[in-house]
Structures are given as structure tokens and as C-alpha cells.
Image (cartoon, rainbow over all chains, first blue to last red; front, side):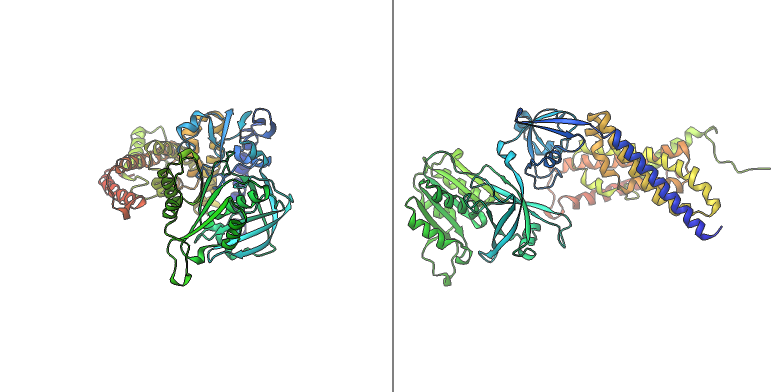
Length: 370
Length: 212
């Protein structure tokens, strides 16, 4: 027999056996992993979804344009995609257990990327998640705010406008690029006010080695198309008219930059003092704009503070760690509300300071950037 | 006229042979501690005793079944083709991987359908096993040792059992380790690898006890 025949028979054997197994798996998938039509009842009858069973709850909902926040992309590590499942979820999977608190389990809260749709289900999700949509837009402007913070202004194309509550965030998609094989989503607070409905502005601080920020800083150019979904998040002004203390650092500026411009436009004259912390003068941004608002609006006070101003900064404003400046600037906080946005360490320290000034813990609202 | 007869399953002493295969596969040739195969899940799933047992059972199940399937494929399909100059030795590597991957996928679907309880206890570990070198190693060693039919099944079971014993021992040690002071630089995989090394040395005592 010639060598050609040997090669042909060997290849045929391998292909034949592989094809036989592939066919077997296809048949099995058709009959074993087929859970038929399932009905998902959302928020007790407010929406009824007829879906094909077999996929995870997260991806099934995503297929029906209901976007549950998820940072890890369904790998069961970030625990953002928690959803209350009233009926039909079965027992809690071992992959969910480390991510659920005892309270979650008691309230039927589940990790939606680890729950499969195998039968009819009834779920409850925050009403505003039903408003979450996928948006595409074009980058109209990228500008440097400081050496490591950029502002992105995106003109929406489809849908052309967005509705959100100031303080909410969107998940920006960084597509696959050289060095990052798959698309990732990262959360950024919306910095533009809601009346500027045709645009979304994001304030992005560079994270060394970060997948999304590297893409924004090194690959994204003006005119590029971007997509994101949102809005998400419960960080927003309360319905009271209590005096407020705002504390932010770095890109934690974003929600407040949205809120203050919204308050001015909507004429919400609620007294507030905004403490913004940075290291040197070069780390401050929007200072002129915010000082201008401070002069224009009698209810708004802006206090930028530098922890270590350089000699050349010629800084005559507040100096010291943001918590020290807040400690000096706020007297009795018992009747006030605190709104904090920034890194975890800064928030923990600021919460401690505000509690020390008599502010009740449940009146302190924050958005931790991690 | 004398023909070389392969040992048949009716020969006297066959049960004793099976026992030797089992002990040898489990202890003297422990696939993890003497061959160092299947290290990735050994390091990552050995943090908790409960998941280590689940993973171990999944490996036992899969090695037992795939060794039997691969033995059948090799001795009844590939071996006879050697007469036609087909390179059975090279083909077995590709085909064994195909068999293992397909079997694991099929089992995952089947278990999920039949029993959610069993799926949560065992099934979720199955995808982790598809690419586990210990499973493929067991099948390849089995062919080297010229094991057929029931012997192959027992060898697969023994190899899986040996792997399970190793990971359960490691999980037990690591659970105790949580309460002891480990130098910061050695925390996690570092100290685990050192422990694995010491365990491997302990398993050396089984060497030469019996040989297949």
C-alpha cells in the first residue's frame, strides 16, 4: 500500500470518529439540553417573555434587551448580576454560594449568570432596569482634564437620546484590540446632565494596565463609534431638602458634575457644599467652571482641597487630606446628608469623618469606584 | 502448534491481577504524586474539602469510563489497522482527546437533565476535566501497559481514585493551613506546591512494592 493511502485512511479515520461524536453531541443537545419554550414573568405581570430554555438567565434576558449589570461577563465572579427569582430557579448552585449573603438567600436573590432557564420563571428586577438599553454613538471630543484623566463626549446615534437620573452610570464596551482578545464592559458615571439628552459625557481615569482605560487612552480617537448600555445605579439625590455635603476625588467628579448642572437647570435650590480632593493643582479640573457656579448660585459652595500642593502651585485654598478639610469645614452634620464618590479608601475615611460629625449612617450615600 | 494467547478473563487468578492493577494504579503509580499530571485543578480546587471531594469523584467517574472506551477503541479499531501500516500509536493521542471531550460534554448534559442535585455536586466540575492531562495520561499509560477490557476499566478507576485521594489529602491539609502562619511570600500556590512535593516524597515508599 502506498503512503498516500495510509495518510488518507488515517485522516478519514480521525475525521470519521470526530464527526460521529459531533453528530452524537448535536443530537444530545437537541434532545437533552432542550428545555422547550419557557415563560419568564417579569415584575409580577408587567412583562411576559417567551424564551427558549437552556441558556443562563442573564444571557436570556440580555437576548430580550433587558440588561442586568455584569462586570465579569457571566463568569460568576463579580456578583453584580443579582436578580430576585420568585419562582422556578431551583436550588442555589455551589457556584453562587460564595457570592450570596444569608440575606440574599432569604430574599430569593440569585446570581443570574449561574441560574439556567429550565422551566417557567417569575423574576423581579428594579423597574429602571427595564429602561436599560444598548446605545451606540460617535466620540465627538476627547480631551485631557489632567495628566491621567480624560473626558469623553459621545454624540448618541442609536437611540438618539438617553433618559437617566443624574448620578447613574453606564457600561462602556471596550472592543477587542491588540492585547485584549475579547470585548469587556466597564462602568462609568455619566458626567453630563440629563437635559443634554443627545450626549453622554464620561470622565475616565487611567488605570495602569486596565483593559478599558488602555483602550480609551491609546486606541480611541475622535469620530470612532462606541457602544454602551445603561443607565444603571441607585446613586442619586434623595427626595428630601436637607442640606448636603458632597465629597469626591479624581474621576469621582463625574456624578456631581452631572448633578450640579442638572440642579441649576431644574432650579433645585438645595444647599450643598462640594469638597473635591486632589494632590496638586495639576490634578484639579473643572475648577473655573465650578467656582463660577459657586458665585452664580447662592446655595452652592465649592471647596477644592490639595493634600500636597507644590511650591509652584501658589495655592491659597484649603490644604490637607480631604477628610481633614471636611472635618474643619463641616460643623454639625446631624441634619445633613452626605454624598460621596471616589476610591474605596477615600470613601471609608470620609464616612468615618461624617459619622464623627454626627451624621447618621443611613444618610450617607456613596458610589465606590473600584 | 502453539499460539500466544492473551490472558483471558476466565484464567485463574484474574481477580488477583485486577487487585494488583487497582493498588498499583492508585498508590505505587499515583497519577498525581508520582507522574505530576492534573496539577492545575489539584492546585485550584483543593481549597475546600467539599469541592475537592466533588472534583475527585468527577475524575474517578471520567477516568473509569474513558479508559474503558479508549481501550475498546484502541484494541478493536486502531490495533487491527496496524497490519495496514496505519500509525495507531500517533492516532491514539488525537482520538483519545476527542473521545474524552465528547464523553465529558455528553455526561454534563445528561447529568444536568437527570438530576440537578447530582449536577451541582459533580456536574459543574466536568467542564474543568475536559482538558485535564491526568485523564488523557491514564488512557495512554493503560495502552502502554497492554491492558484490555475489564483490566482497563479497573486501571482507570484506580488512576482516578489515586488522584482523588491526593486532592482530598491536600484539601484537608490546606484547610488546616488556613489557621497557621505561612510566610507571606509562600501563601497560596507556593506553599501548596511545597506540600505537594512532600506528599510525593511520602508516596515514594510505595515504589517497587508491586509492579505491573
